[in-house]
Image 1 (tube, rainbow, N blue to C red):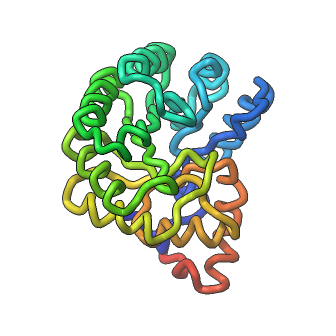
Image 2 (image 1 turned 120 degrees about the vertical axis):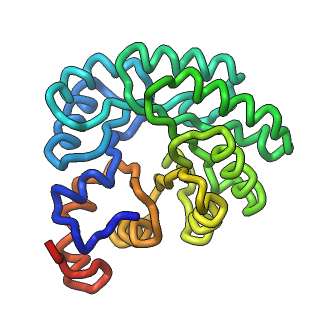
Length: 239
């Protein structure tokens, strides 16, 4: 769990995966976003597709920020074999973290064998890259969220992620369902689609146990750290 009392702004940056708005994205947008990720010491920079990975690699060269992308973003409805091919392509292109959107329709239909196979194929195709599985919790019941988290843990993916950020984001109750389902599993939690007021809600998820926040607003949220301490939402800095 992130200990915010030990975090200054630079250390806090490691709790964020930065990205840019995927709609109408240009190479200039991607490069600017990469530079922001480096400036704020983010854990990773995400493009919505590996099409942008060559530019991402250029901008992140020499930094600790991981080049990353989404797989079957944002709908997650492609067959597992196609998701695996996209994952292999992304990793071969240089991505070191990959976020795959789970097949929500298959999950809601109770097709757990299909979901397990999709997760196994994804994990295998990703190789040494960090694997994060997006649930899109706004479309799921608590039981479906729990079942998905159990399968993610069973297969051994690295993170369960709440949302793509393209639809309705998670509420705290949905996040806590994920957290309870993954207790003792070693699977970590990533939140995306943080609702407004974004800084306050992002810090609330970190305090609740999220290890990563995926957002286009990483810079603004990190810069709000002093304000969050002033109002008492974040504990005083202990160094």
